[in-house]
Image 1: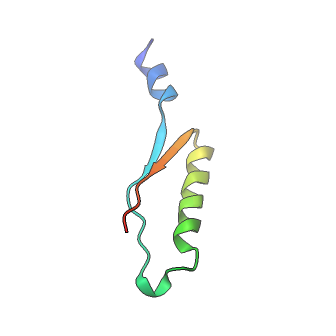
Image 2: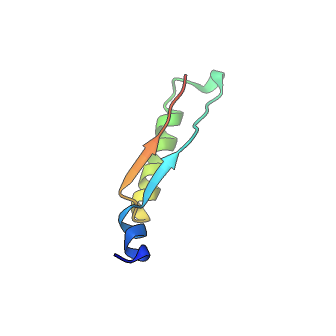
Length: 55
């Protein structure tokens, strides 16, 4: 298998950090940002998107 085929079959997105100021929390801001990131990634041909979340 060529490296170009291998690279295309394993494309994925990763969101490392999403932060919202304390005064703006609980308004769906982070959810909307994550949803937009997933939509953009998928429109670019990415099949999987991973994220990490710390409280």
